[in-house]
Length: 89
Image (cartoon, rainbow, N blue to C red; front, side, top):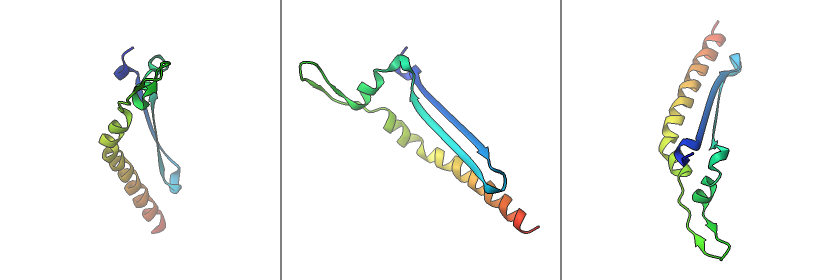
């Protein structure tokens, strides 16, 4: 399996009723691409040679964080509006 095919992402949203909404996100690697952690963080060979890290997870997060913030903001807005309507009954 190629590294790009082994990156797994899961995002769930839900509601706690009047208490508000929640968002849960999780990103990780499939077990078949265990070597991804060595690419991300670098490693030292048995001979003592250091192999430089080549981060890919953090840059991906940095590129998508504003989209995640937008999703969270929309959920907060909906929750605040629902709570306000409940208060003004």
